[in-house]
Length: 275
Image (tube, rainbow, N blue to C red; front, top):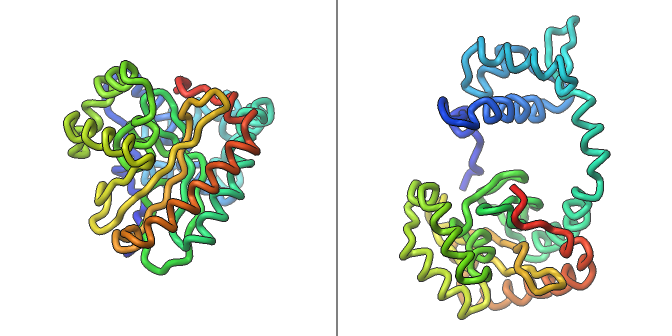
């Protein structure tokens, strides 16, 4: 199965609403980041973001003015600016978990041969913090690093939701109702999934973004016992059925224990309510 590729319509922000300008800026920065060292022309950014020329031009000029983008007059191309690098360096400790978790995610993908993910709770969403591609020939890319999914939508977001306090779950369900409805996941279905996840100790979600694909996730807790993250494996459905599912869960739980034991201080610093 072919990987899912991002399209302009995936990135296009809402044309109205209180966060419209921020959404447009984020889309432009995403486009520049995807160009790596080659940079983008104005028309390239327009194509990548599906935004109008005037909107892109004003956005790029604003980013250049504040050091978040750089414009090369010789090539007429835009690049990410040095100011973003400076911000990242100042926030090294906040991004250390992503670096430290990478070997665990990579080892899971190598051992199980399926796509492996690490997700953190961020407010009412799950943030993909780590990804490694498995070697099994049939796969699908359901998440990119940096993507957000509403809690309850998919195996990782479900694992993160199921092990929250009951009163908090109700607040999250109310906050994510609209986003989940667009994915065909109503409150009744989520509540059934939560009950099953709590009973089994792991979350499983079938065919959310691709038919015949299944995700299975195991919660990761901080030293206070709070569920703040999850490891996930996504594969074709037949690879996550018994008896193989038992072996997959055993390997995932080993990764969870190792991460909790070795990265406890970093997990303790995770602020799940940060958006």
